[in-house]
Amino acid sequence: MAAAVLTGMRVDIWSDIVCPWCYIGKRHFEQGLAGFGPRDEIEVVYHAFELDPSIPPGAGTPILDLLATKYGMTREQAAQAEAGVAAKAEAAGLPFTGSRVMGNTFDAHRLVRLGRERGVQEQVLQALYEAYFGAGKPVFEAAELTGLAAAAGLDAAQAAQVLADGTYADAVREDEAQASSLGISGVPFTVLDGRYAVSGAQPPEAFAAALDRAWSETSSRT
Image 1 (cartoon, rainbow, N blue to C red):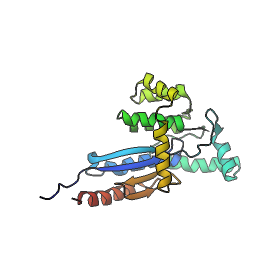
Image 2 (cartoon, one colour; image 1 turned 180 degrees about the vertical axis):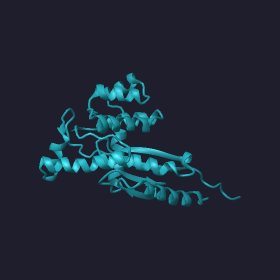
Image 3 (cartoon, rainbow, N blue to C red; image 1 turned 90 degrees about the vertical axis):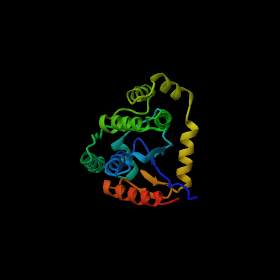
Image 4 (cartoon, rainbow, N blue to C red; image 1 turned 135 degrees about the vertical axis):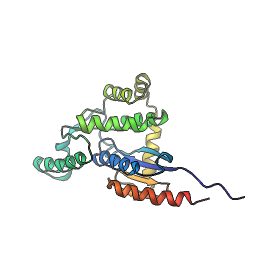
């Protein structure tokens, strides 16, 4: 007897909360997915990736200062670069502010993992993005993170406990180790059906095409 045709497909996305291209890429992916016929059969799983895990917890650097130092720019050049990213975000319908501080995102990733366990991962991640890029909030502090988690549908007391006791630290490290094993050095990085990779914040139509291709090949397997 022939085996049943497989249904459903998983999409894995590595990203960081302080990565503007991840913020924009998430919206582009969602726009590409919105027009995809069997979108209800797509499972999207977000994975942790830290742009700079060396930042000490509690430390923070204004984004323009960080860009100027990292890329050898003047502050004026850094501001121009930020304006270009802001234009991309606004074209995607996303709020964007340059009044941000770069900090350690490990704890934020642990809350995203809690969201995954509770079925609200996308909502938690979006709340963090909007707070950071839209309002310039410090998404590195326990009080801020707990409030955002609660607004996104998590239990505030449970979120606070996770932040206090180190829960999901191993899960975040596993995500990062998997990224390394796959050769992922920049984000966003999207893997469809465990086989097809899309690097960067591609336009919505590129994600739609990738979904079509991966789905057609996945659904034909028996």
